[in-house]
Length: 156
Image 1 (cartoon, one colour):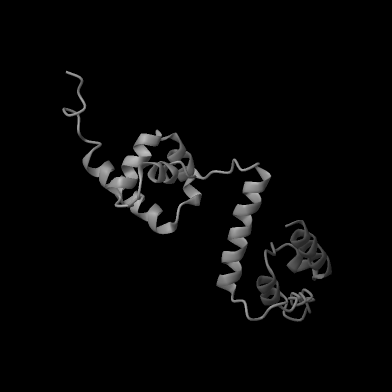
Image 2 (cartoon, rainbow, N blue to C red):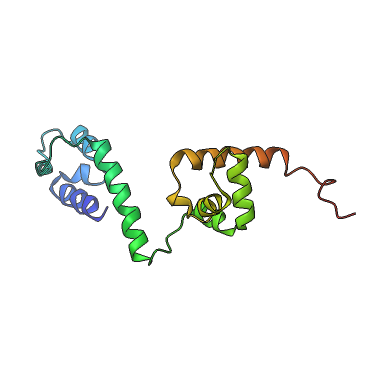
């Protein structure tokens, strides 16, 4: 903005006296008012230098996925293993019995109760993606059908 004003003032100083009184706001207006003036063009920016890929066989999507995984791993290491997202925090807040119940309702089979307990005590990020999706589906159903219940939850 200051550079534009300085350029306008410099151009106005060069213009004949009659045109100096007119407000000049931009280059096209100035060229219309004084076509004989040559206004220097801004120097062209050099093209950005892009370093060559070290491994051209890796696609952009694969590189993004790899960087996302590294970001999560570094966040976990930096926080001493305490890194959690919102889903992980909610999963940890649930009592172990509720986690086991969600795993059963989601159809996740365990050979024994200790194995089910071991699955329920895992961190959210440690669960396989299919199990996480099954649990999310069950929780959405619970939110839809169980949350509105009030008579069944009454202590009377």
